Image (cartoon, rainbow, N blue to C red; front, side):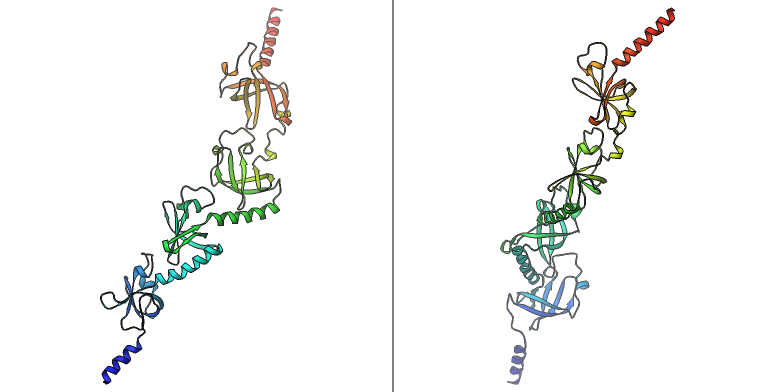
Length: 365
């Protein structure tokens, strides 16, 4: 009778548990594959490595020590060897799920490190709960290659939360745009036209380049990239280039930029350097039906009208000239305000004829 009473007393001293219960246990031992836990039950509990963490690279003995107290969830009363099967990560995931639910409902900004860059987006883990961030929501601009975001910390809000389908979707794009909106507002309050600031080229297009000037993008239009003519912006700028720019125009929330500093304006003293009657040399840069444009220097093109190419009748400039040809011509008109210079080869031909006639007359005399 006393023996039965002792067994009964021992049985009564154990905690009554069942599947799904959350219990507190003390770590007894740790191996590379599992953790043994005393849960004050007639059998010890076992936490397999994959029930402790989703990260296969974790070394259990280095993160869990005998004597550690863990809250765990009961998955199975008997694993076949008489031990209780426990899970640490599932309980943690349930707690985090509540955090994600609250963040989803309140649009709270969360932070996590990108654990993996996969096809179609990014994976982050919030305390054992995997969250997927689609490529379309990973950045606020189109980014074909997301590999640069691997192992970086990102901020996001939950755009979808469905525990039943285990569907947790994050959105970085909204957070980035809201941040930029705040930065733009602050910048616009103090920015003025004419300011000179440093920036970094973010993207180059066929019509210009977008430059980050402190968290806000401004447009450096192709027409503001050089005093000379440019056919392709990528011939001058690359993504990541550091550039000093002038704030040319502020139109509500749009910022126009320029790198055409007045001190480098080749038209400043053009009237003196290209006086009427002087003879210059240049290369044919482009042609139209009515004439050829000759580059005298970077930023200064002069028009050689078709009627001024030769004393003979010419239908179009391309009949006698081609792009790249070097020509010598006289300046017949200069208008620096309108950035216009007119040339004439015919004028030189007339001077040459007069010179030849004078030489012949002198020789006859």
